Length: 441
Picture 1 (cartoon, rainbow, N blue to C red):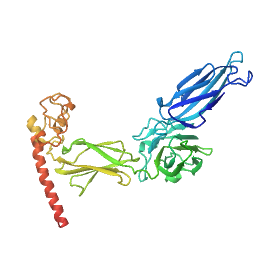
Picture 2: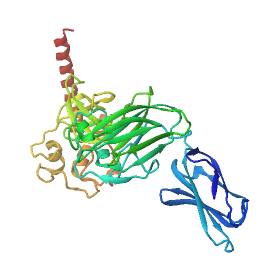
Picture 3: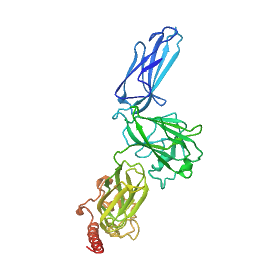
Picture 4: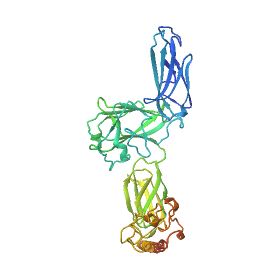
């Protein structure tokens, strides 16, 4: 039994022609001699994703690879001899990489190695690229503080271990392979060979990271020139070998970016919950900052948080129409993007329920009837959210979708907010005047 096409480790796309030769040497030397059938299988790991049986010459199969996800597969053929020839079986198999997206994967590619229970935004699972591995979960959290280009903490929670390999169908080119490590125990001797070249040798993670459960990041330059993607061999030299994540970055390619998409509201009340959303191809965490004076000063909302595209926080109780929010790389502040200006109107909130006292008195007659969590008109919207959105807690608007943020039209907000915005404008103008005077201009 012999698969003649495709060759072992071939990268394929579109329609794949599979051909095989099978014969029982005890019957004859020609293709088909003593053969009852040949069964072809396309396997992803241990799962058969497609199969085909041939009961007569020729032994071939046409596979539409576009029906399957890009990644690594095994193509297997099993020949069964006739009853007269003993009914025995013979098997051959080859490894292939399906790559229909532009001839391979696109970069940057970030692979989260190990247990699929620990997904990270912007990172793909390793299943399509790895073979011969097992997964291990670290019982401790990994410290990423001070580590340049660290991955999100979730990536370090699990690893792919035991001697294993990756087959990643990138097109020919030059790349930076960024490897992420963490070790709970230590005393390792790990070697990584990429495209036939040893790039990391005799690595002991704990020693190099400066302690157990500390993140370690190593960058290596890789050239792919054989048209067969990037092959990575991981050896423990008799012990264990493991990595938490891999990033494949195009050398000299565009720098990572952060682009803020939206703010949940442009006219906010003090103490209101606000959500900023963004998109980014940054590999590490981001920080979020807020200013109410056009960046003359600022407050760190969160120093480091997952680059998952959104963050919600409670805005300061301030009066300003010169507010901005900035999202940046938590490691060094670059790249970054900012959104603004938007306004915040301070509230008087003696009872601490985040609702303006005057609004409570207007609608409830006092400041004690509601604590913000109740829903006076039973419309599915709490009194606090009614206040934030300029609603009427005595009129059922019909749920959260019935009205939205007040937006930029002052007529759409309640009278208290319109007055507060005017006060904020006056205060902002005074701040700017003071700033100009200090600059001497």
